[in-house]
Image 1 (cartoon, rainbow, N blue to C red):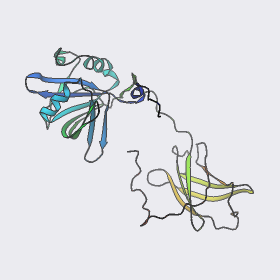
Image 2: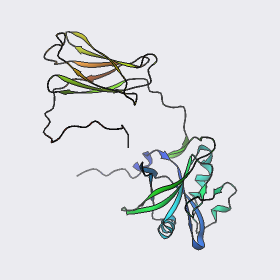
Image 3: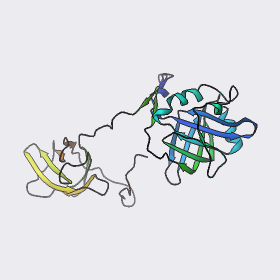
Image 4: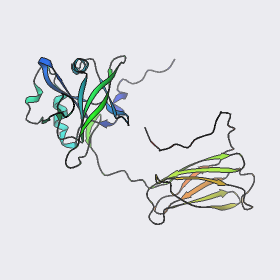
Length: 276
């Protein structure tokens, strides 16, 4: 029997705090804080907001067919805490002097000023989850602050961002191909000097330089290297690949035998690398 998951695992998520505004009939404009708000498609830009069963905003979105989403800045921690603590059934939150609403350009829903970004959104799909309800909407207008702002993030508590995380090392992985070909892919910080990646075969009998390679247009290494030179040992048992880049700690990868490919059609390189 699988063990039960701890009930508060959801608090491990880290994300930008969102403010969801709705405008609907006699209730007027309402603003609530939404911890689970994110982008789910790039072009067109789609956002998803998950709301719990106690949120009146669920009814307001379904009735009006849209909402605005503001991604909070660090300065909006107090505002996010307030609008997330009270319901529209209890108080008119728009009377707060801290809540500054901007006029919509495309929809009929105002948006909250002062954030990293505000989007006017039209509802495209609603998905009923076991407890929450997921609203997927298309962004049809955007409002950016005159000066870029730093985001307010939620990870149990609310936090501002510190200094950027420094990438200090090369990370490399390889694929051995039939015909003694090697694909080497690596990422790392910008080079402090020539924009080159130095690849070395580290074999038990000694190191074998495999060459210096320029970056791709995305600043990474993606090279296919033949291993047919007389200086390359055979077999390659116990060998590793080392990749060096000026100003970074080197990266290492293990060599493994090529994996037979039984698929149909050729393997296409990804047009644009992405985490999404």
